[in-house]
Length: 174
Image: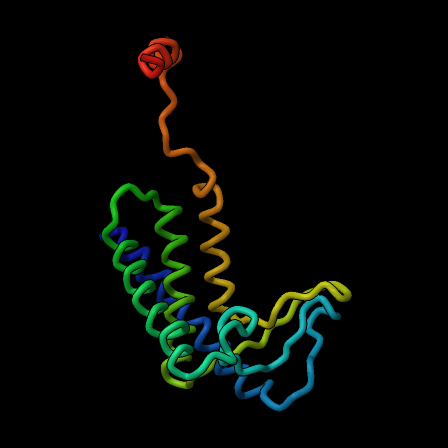
C-alpha cells in the first residue's frame, strides 16, 4: 500500500506539474521572443517539438515516427510503471526514480498522442554552452535517471568472504 501511494503520488505530481507548466507556456510564451529569467542562464522559449530528445525523429516518415516515438515508448512506459508498482528487489529510492521517469514519460507521451508534438519551453546554459530546449516532464525523467546512477555502477556479484576467497579461486582453476 505504501509503495502504491509513493508511485502514484510521484507519477501524478510529475504529470500535474508538467501539464500545468505547459498550459502556462502555451498561454504566455507562444509567439513571444526568448525571455531571460535568470540572465542568459535560464530562459523561456516556446517550441513545439515533433521529435523526441533534441528533436530526434522529427524528420522521420509519419509511420516510423508513430512507432518510434509513440507506440514503443508507450509499451516501455506501461511496462516500467507496472514493474515499479510490483517488481521485487527495489528500494524506496529506486521506486521513486522509476516513478519520476514514468510520470515524465507518460506526460510527454500524452502530448504526442493528443497533439502530435510536445511543448518545450526551458533553455539553460552559459555562453555558447546550452542545453536543448526542455520541459518539466524532461526534468522528472532526468531526475529519475540521475537517482538511478549509483545503482547502475554497483556490482551485482557478491564478493566472497575473505576466508572463502582462496578456496573459491582454487575451485575455479580445476
